[in-house]
Image (cartoon, rainbow, N blue to C red; front, side, top):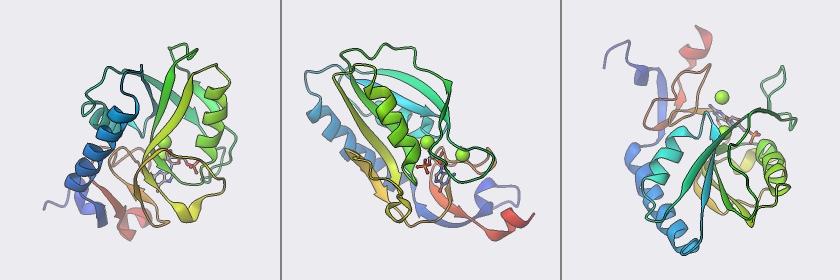
Length: 184
Ligand code: 5GP
Ligand code: MG
Ligand code: MG
């Protein structure tokens, strides 16, 4: 592996591309069953959910629409505050729609619990959540997540949409960064 190779910055691979794909096969089949005969609007949360949205949506056999929202949950610090700002709102009107929020990761759960009540206030028929990753030990608030890819340890991970300083989103797998990345 070349020194410039982005994967060389990783210490440990937690989930391979194959593992992520196999789990998405199962989740997509479950979503197809659960929403059979219903309209479905997938709402991806930018930017982290781009990979899971693309990989999940292309596995679904039903008609779906895709829309996007961008929110900022972090104030000046690095910890989720629960204070959320909408940077880009949805194009779609949610009235009477079945909405499935597609998320990269649930850490404290604060962003998602805010998002859930915000979308529920718009008159949808239903709102559920699909998250590729969840850190159960980091939960600060209980969020009812219908579809979870993997529960992972309470460590900072990158890849598969998740960034460190906007990098590593393009990795097709999930891993932890080597210490030299933080110290350089
Ligand atoms: P929460 O509000 O659940 O604490 O965090 C929400 C957002 O924080 C996630 O959507 C994600 O963008 C970011 N985040 C939380 N944990 C991690 C992590 O381990 N790695 C990365 N790269 N981002 C994370
Ligand atoms: Mg996210
Ligand atoms: Mg980030």
